[in-house]
Length: 313
Ligand SMILES: Cc1cc2nc3c(=O)[nH]c(=O)nc-3n(C[C@H](O)[C@H](O)[C@H](O)COP(=O)(O)O)c2cc1C
Image (cartoon, rainbow, N blue to C red; front, side, top):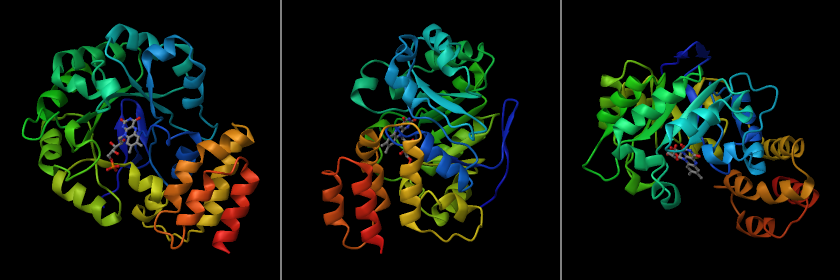
């Protein structure tokens, strides 16, 4: 696929292959692994602006970055432009170079609060949010969906609104809120976003292989792609897309991932928070069902490492 740098305000990414914000997954360890495989930009999972202002301890973990992360990008959610700007200007986000605003989260808790994908129904508020957030001086990017329900698409209106508000890049997840993460991706709507946008458009949804990436770019004309689940299962997809020769040892990758997490969290915490990711690494591995079940009984990293080393030997 066509590789190119992406300009986001005064920041230039080395390429146009991005790791998506992923709640529960895109922490510092996963982001660094994807960056090492060549991802051009990564995002923290979404953090609540209100949580940031209340100095929530958990939010600090979500925003933790390792020193190697060159371009730091945090994703925030909220619906009050002034609270959101204050959150961006708070100490917790001071180290971040780019702030991405979530206009896509489909979860009822967020949606019913008028946040995430609910804002797709209110382009003028979306514009106001981006306008106010941009006053922070940091480049603001937006991640949107194409609408709430199939057939009632709002892509063009929302893209125009957020670009008018000052967005420096827009990522379009080519599904409606109703589809959550399943079903066909609507390439035509992403293509419409590209047509009306004066800033880079990144296409997201359903990219699991280099062929999917190629198809996405060809069908939409987007400037780049963002990968979510495909990168959790196969973070080396970035190296494949860059045309690098990839020889992967899942055993080594799993051990590396655990060791990275141990630089921040204690042994017991790692043994718990790594389980979901480990199951994704084991996806497609023959005879891994029993191991996946056992993982949920292990309470320390040593047991996990032993089981993994046994499995792959
Ligand atoms: C477990 C999970 C967590 C997610 N968390 C976020 C999030 O925090 N912020 C966000 O904008 N999107 C989030 N998403 C959506 C993804 O970023 C992406 O838009 C979606 O999964 C479609 O891409 P894919 O088909 O490549 O997976 C999440 C998706 C999943 C599956």
